[in-house]
Length: 215
Image 1 (cartoon, helix red, strand yellow):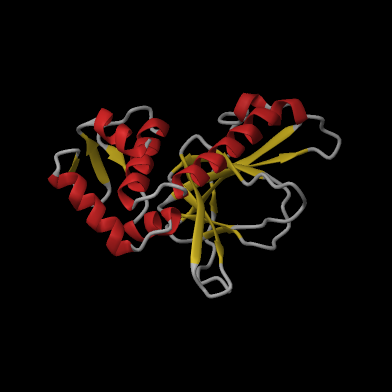
Image 2 (spheres, helix red, strand yellow):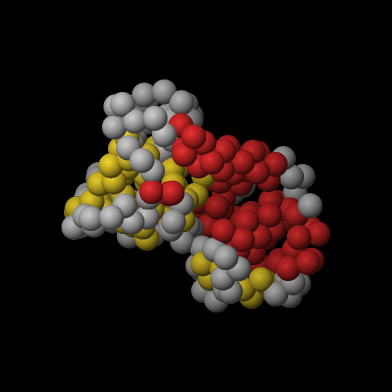
């Protein structure tokens, strides 16, 4: 059902648990695997036995609806973790947006790391709740404004903000068409709230105004 084929190149592992959140006791980080743009990391319905940390690149997590449409539930950036499941099965697809390096982190069968994993799981839950709030916004402008501010915050105030995802991806994340997303970007640019440095770089000029719109 999925259109992409996985392609992975394992890079040399490191002796220390570099990049593992909190250096989890009982966690076995694997060598970094390289995924070209558009390649699948895991599929909906596959057995889940690890969670993942992005060393570089970006990942989209999505589900295919019964009518063939795609609903993106999350974007994950470098340094972030994803792939937590409440049971032994993945309920979404995970796919590399651009050239991405991912380290799988597997837990020993007898490892008790629930206390260490709880902050990571709660952070994922918070992001899911924030996404629901974004989808509840009344207008497309409000949704896009909230999205841009979230991306800026997650990149530590990087200016301009890097958008590894396409306008189509953004639309599938915000519940908008690609045409609507493009129109909103143009509108925000024309009003002097943002500057566009190509398709994948956005400079936020008026943070306060954008925040007022998104709230």
